[in-house]
Image 1 (cartoon, helix red, strand yellow):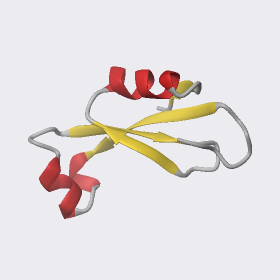
Image 2 (cartoon, one colour):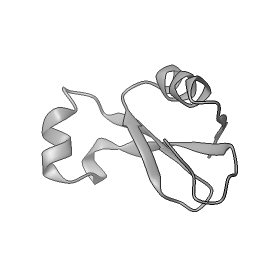
Image 3 (cartoon, rainbow, N blue to C red):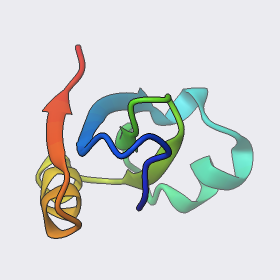
Length: 69
């Protein structure tokens, strides 16, 4: 995960699986929501099935995660 402008903040947001492309829905293994991690420019860096994992992943890469509502 890298950001374009050097900002170490990333944003975690809930994504409804039903809003995703079919190929991603097929891999969601029965989950109703996933968590997307985005940089400050809006680029998606990761898509995971668990909120804690999203935050852990960001911190493991020295980013400061913030939940978006």
